[in-house]
Image (cartoon, rainbow, N blue to C red; front, top):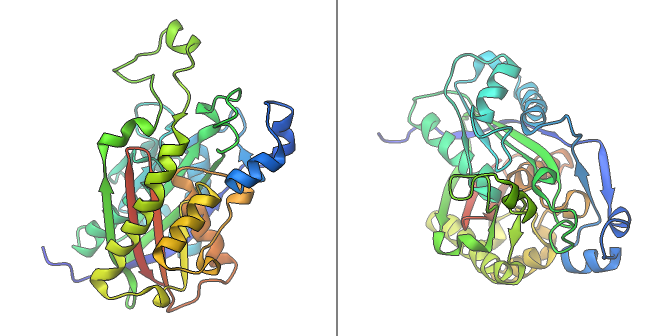
Length: 328
């Protein structure tokens, strides 16, 4: 079906847990220092959800705020997508739990698991449904409780991750909106960052728990090499077909993984660092939620205005990646 309907963001919302875990706090937990963490990642603190606060709870709060910003009710939503690698449980889908909590109709609701690329993937999926006229309004939520799968004795990973949620309501717009999308994946690199146990390959057993296989495992140095190239290539794949050049982009909203990765990717893309929106110092890496929360805060801060072209750019486990050009 030919796409004729322009699709854009009607409202945004975020939710961040109250608890702040600083680098100084981590110094008391593992053999690390504030200087070491900041110099290698750019992270100074991160948010940690309460024990009784699940991914669906954070997603629900972000969703409610996005709906309010869009001046819509849950009854107006035709599709719900939750991007997460930390669902409340394997099933039912976290999206179904959110559907019930916000009081939405019995509309399609499902999760996607593409790690840090999840927010862009979710918006890309929803855009197709709206542009083709199948649905009118979609709710895309990226929510992660990474603290629940972080090994707090592993200093190479525990300093990186945090919890939070961001949401967007998509719908028809008269001008601008989503101009282009580039998505990709390379399963050959899947071992670079993964959660080994808990699925059908390695079900939960006493041994899998003792071996700490239910926590994030990462090959940081190899991931760094791929991430810089992937983010730069994805950006070109999204911008070149529509004739958008680096100077046309007002703001880049990257996945907040590591300050060194982001600066290296910006250099490779020919972008000045002042065009890169960063909040990694406050929240660390929140997987799919990072891009969503960063977009919300960039808009709230006034750094994105009507008519600006922005670029979302992310990579994640899988490996997966995605980039999207939006005219605000």
